[in-house]
Length: 405
Image 1: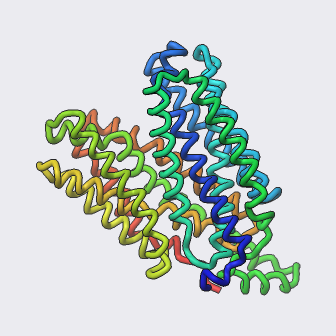
Image 2: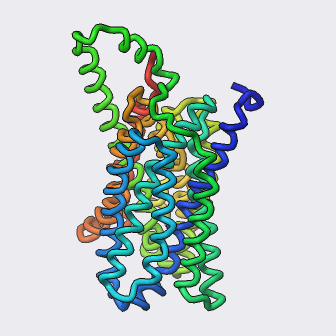
């Protein structure tokens, strides 16, 4: 469908979803960049902070699992509004915390809201993408990265100017609430009952089938459950690799090549840059070659990057390896969410919440797995774990193939 024929309401919704993704990334970054100030204010040790961050992630998973069924019942627009408001208000909590207990409560609230927003905004993005009838999901995820980048810059500038963390996070909270109030009316309404174009025919046939014949319906449900599990497994492996890159790339370069911290930090910079740039390009690639190709060949590029990381003894080649890893992973997760949201079910948001929550576990598990492996082998050798993960993703890329009519 040509872009000139798209309903202006759909275009406005697309722009609104872009801002929602950017807002989520921005709010997350505002917490992250203020972690040192917040730990000083609350007097917690690094070990306690690590435990609290895991608790934040756990609360996020709870938010994801609750938001999915709610979005199916109430519509993703309603849940986006509620979740974005909760997240915006909750980002102030860590700044107001004065001790471990209040910080734990604040992080649990923030994690819950952020997790719920992750699922609901991706569900809304699927509805908008469906209305566009062409791939646009990757660009939404690129805006999440862009919002995080903006938040990190503004947070760093505020700290450089000597602003109190409570003032900075208060301004972020107010901005988030106002932006949410302006955006929610522009999102698409309750489209949870809409039938995905690629499954409309089969759903119609099911609707006219006598209700006494439940075997085909049961078979379809079993097939959908298997598809959800396959998509969740791929999401787990992809986000496992992304988590490894976020937490271990700089240390890998420093330890393997014996360079200073500033040079080592370029590894995650290279990964992040190509991850963001790749997401802006992934929609066109998906439209031209299909979802399966983006996942299959993207993960192969990531695998080649990891091989280069493990074998290179030269800084530029190692940085190239991390850049290839970011580029290869960039388009995978958006394709998985698009596939999960178009399974031809009235519970699309619930399906996405299952995929998202298991994938999120991969993001948490990846760094831990590497940590355990380093007790047995050198850090660079431990990179075989994400290498195996992305190769398995390439092998199972067919799971993101659109449903046949």
